[in-house]
Image (tube, rainbow, N blue to C red; front, side):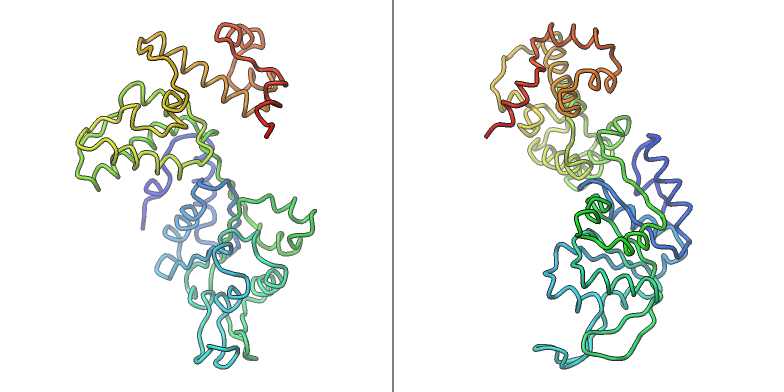
Length: 327
């Protein structure tokens, strides 16, 4: 059995909640819906459920609904009989049947068309499939896990997703927190990916220069853990034989000096001031330039926030936001 620690790196309360839910559902047959932004590791969580549960000896079959054209997806999922359509020269089992005894993982389920949503609903209710072009009904013994980065309740309101299917899929919901909501896990993730990719590149004892670490800690990570993983891999490649990651290896979006040509002040006070400016600007953007919300999020009083904004000459007005959003 795999240790959950190999799947879930971090000690934050948000991640502890995910671990708790995995432990609760891993041996059950009930459908699980995993929700979270792109890059948060939804398939990783599905694999953790499978690999730590009673079905771990069976197959884990993942399908991304958005990666397969809709006219091909039905035959891929449900299979087909010989002669069902041009090119169907033999009977073929679908991926759902192949998941028998194991887990079928349907990623980006919110991208399913309405006709396929109806077929999926029947499948989950009856645990039966019928191949395209065939009348025979086949029983399916697979555990169903689905995932989405969409707000399915909003999709229902807009007429894009079936409400009955939604309630069938969400017997148990696991919400994966974005990286910005589990900041205390960042250092562990940095160390984990540095060690992982360091081994692949035959590098030992990877370290982060203080300035690089400060910039990585201050970035908002909109791409979540996937973006962090790709950034560390990129840094290790660019660093060559050096076992220390310096700020010049970071992407311009993280090291803004590369992008803006800011001053060359490398003193501690200069680095600290730049970090504070960057931190405050990102916090303001996350809170839609609402100063009260920003102060609450970063643990300052409104007066304390105003003093910092004035000290670092940061314009947090609505007009600035409107200007930044104009084409």
